[in-house]
Length: 161
Image 1 (spheres, rainbow, N blue to C red):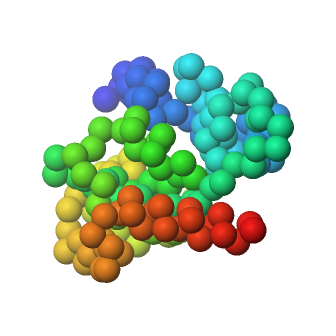
Image 2 (image 1 turned 90 degrees about the vertical axis):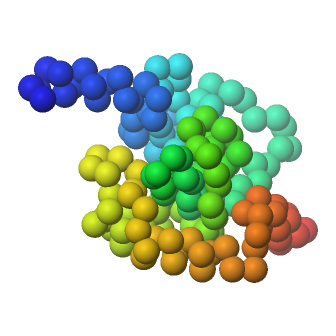
């Protein structure tokens, strides 16, 4: 691809997946500066609060950061979110394979760990035995990833008293 067409393809993809950048101001919900810019506006890259929305008084955002593993056709996506229901709802997928407690640092480690099977410049990976074993280990004892996520949210809420 020539540079012009490559940039056009990049701009087209960014419309769906967003572009990481610094927020114009700290997130009102969690104070983070990392954001994701979409054509429709900004989301906090940590808690996914929409920039410009005002948190209700006294409302504290309950967040449990997870690394998620999705299957779509013959590919697996490794991503992260503090609000996986909202995030995953906007992604093409056939199945939520597993969750792992962790943030962007853990996500990056997983991308490096499975880099030999990564589809270049994406968070999608070709299926492979090493990744399948990892997902299987995460699912051990948890048939439904959403039930596991609900447990983690419940535990986080209990810790807050």
